[in-house]
Picture 1 (cartoon, rainbow, N blue to C red):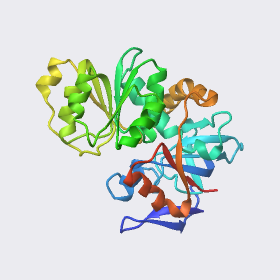
Picture 2 (tube, rainbow, N blue to C red):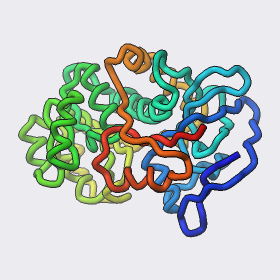
Picture 3 (tube, one colour):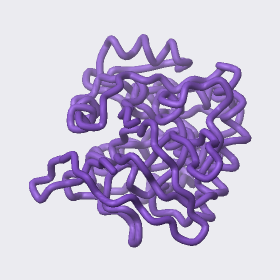
Amino acid sequence: MRAMTITAEHRLELTEVPEPVPGHGEVLVDVVAAGVNRADLAQVAGHYPPPPGASELPGLEVAGRRRDTGEEVVALLAGGGYAEVVAVPEGQLLPVPAGMDLRDAAGVVEVTATVVSNLVVEGGLREGETVLIEGGTGGIGTTAIQLARRLGARVLATVGSDGAVARARELGADVAWNRRTTDLLAAVREAGAADVILDVVGGGAALADHVGMLREHGRLVIIGTLGGASGELPVGLLMGKRARVIGTTLRSRSTEGKREILAATRELVWPMLEDGSLRVPVHARFPLDRAEEAQAVLREGGHLGKVVLEIA
């Protein structure tokens, strides 16, 4: 099969490799398209190796057809998605949302599962609360803004340009700021602070700022390290607010853990995808052999929604 492998020089290379052999409880999926995620960029750069036993190929989500039944499915992977065939535990499959094009569906499962697991399960976002979404026009951000709004939350968002402010508002953000030109700590405090922060920045100065943006009993949910992997945590301020810092990842969870998240995602988000009340925008599509160009879109920023590789 064709697949994108990672070279010693941290580049992507189109290669012929053997098809995967399914293990116990796994099925083969013939891939039609794959979603591109920031974790893929980190893996290619050598900073985010796959969990033990997972495929060495990049790619955390695909859409395709089960080889045993022909059913159209999306799959949440620990790796291997940049290829024509994947082997995936059956519990990490969901049916494609009714009415959705299979290629568009390739960018759905990773972001929706990430948002549900972090805003709903970990962050405990409730109706009437205020949430701050970092990176509001990326794949996760666009989905998080829409879902939080539909859960009855007040939504604040940060974006990377003045033009993106309007796009975040169109998605449902009540307030959005250009993070490059705004004192975010002051702006969020002036807006009343946040009960939940979905944080893709992680370390650096942002860690202390985010604690400063929280309300009493607030929850800072860290899902990325764009600002660095470490930072100073103002423990006294955290304690005074009786707030919590929660760090999570999706990729390294067990199959059972992923199955539970996918079940919650299907129950909560799939009806919204099917009736059109929530959408995951696709910014661009590239053929498999142009995967480096696809990743460059995420690296450069400014995109709205997901980038997809068309494989079949």
